[in-house]
Length: 487
Image (cartoon, rainbow, N blue to C red; front, side):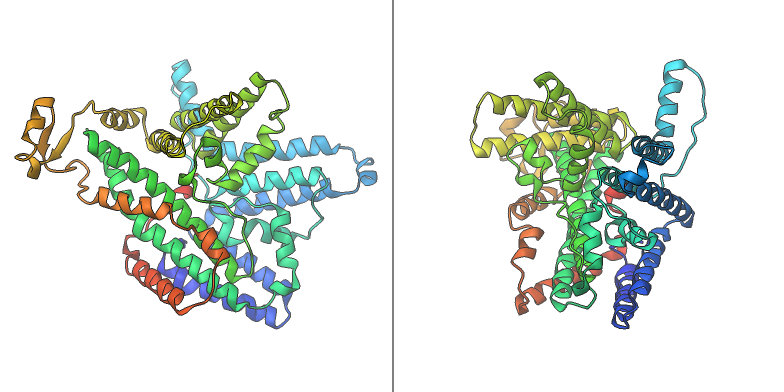
């Protein structure tokens, strides 16, 4: 079930909301939590019910291991298996599950290529959200090993894992961010301020997804997957379309998740904070998918030694962390190369900072944004040839084409190899640069986090919310999944 669908907006969400708070009103707290878990699992199973046993098995396994790690040290000393061994076993099994479904075909294909053996791929369907709930539970196991969690009953643990606003595409939450909120007695009653704020933020996210991201998706898909050649303006329109499609798709999902959670009096951690305002690549990763960056830092980069080792080791740790981050996003060499590019950019930024070098803020933003935009080409491309097609066009190797209506006034440019034809004909994107201009204005305006902090219930905000909601709902006919569902 998608946040941007009629059945979610008009059926699932209102029914879940009213039944949950009705049960709480009757002081049936356990029943309310149980219902919310049931509703979340129903939400998860909507795509394919065969996914359900997988997430239930994963939850049960990690709950048992986590509770065992939670036992006091004097009890642990009597156990036949040490906590270190148990933690290792838990992590390995989680990664094995993820690896089997997400990377088995990738490794088989590459092994077959290297050895010239013909091994049939498994053609497994990637279970929905497996990357997110696996990482979330690995973090729980590590935190339990460190003594940073409490022993929960299975109902509370299931609620922590399955809470539907954040289940499918994050944020990747810690137990300490969620469980105290569900236990807080002040969150057990409807809060009309949270309802108003939640609907306001949800409407912004829905508009971002349905009106902006899905509009850019048409041009990005045509440029990457359909067009056989792209001239200079078409290639830049293609890359920028995907850059903004991904931005508003993920930002829209994050806003909707945050808004829905607020309806239930739950504050999700900030996961997206205007990353295209960044002045360097380190700042970008402090703003983009913040909870994933936190996970990679806390559970990969720091255990490898972080920056507490030699410079060479620090750079190696950075590179390894981001290569693994690229692999987490997808089983393909283009994803790995994308992670490698970001790792190298972070190393270069660290060296630049150590040397005490400075640059103008506008230049720092321009370089950072264009690096991110170019790196997204590899992230989006299904094959290397698709990436090269776009990059060749971006540097003008496939020619420069202006609109034919300028053929008379700008005819002198034909002496420099510039031709005149239908504007952006290979992607059918007459209006793409107009929308690009407007979204540049949007990304430098107040973001949802800032609007949330300054929110006040006013008639103007009510009108704005209704406008966004109605406009989006009228365009739900072209329903599409969120891009991060694929990761």
